[in-house]
Image (tube, rainbow, N blue to C red; front, side, top):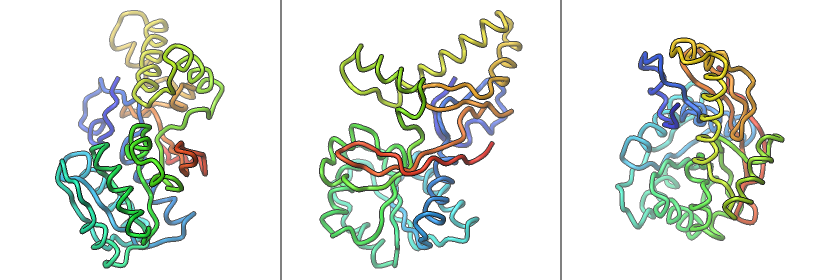
Length: 254
């Protein structure tokens, strides 16, 4: 039961991997869909960190953009530990980008990107992926994150199960739950249900997990594909008062 979001993980032929988060490919497809259909923009600039997460996210956005008839006007990289992104943000502006998409791995670095984007006068629209909208980054970004639009793989409070989970988590730990706690909670519940149904035979447990369709968890509704993908949707949000507010729920398909 994995939480790695690299799209290739469930495409390598391993029959024992079951992803309990939304893959980067689904988030990237949702981002491009929202840019094209809702924001009505066509020219995208990408800023990403030069490692697996950043490169994989940038590649996915670029491919979905191409398929949708949109243009990637430039791709700008950053190194881990960078403290200044002004040069890259200006290059994206000069390339004629209408909107910026970021895939920067470090929380501190993403908060700096947010602040410097605002300091430059917000010269284009900005759409952030799930990793850039985590609670820690929003807290670090403070006012510079206010009003930003992004796409989240999960949004608390979208079902009675999610609401109950949030309330129980807050009561136990006195803080809002984060994504890592939510997906592992769902993964354990799904695995336990499969064992209760199938017994201890590993092949039957695998079949029971893959037969899980329409299971409503804390992170979303799980319907496993043959390759082990559990979730197939994402949420467009806007940051208000430091927290995400729903704009649109999107299903990307299985």
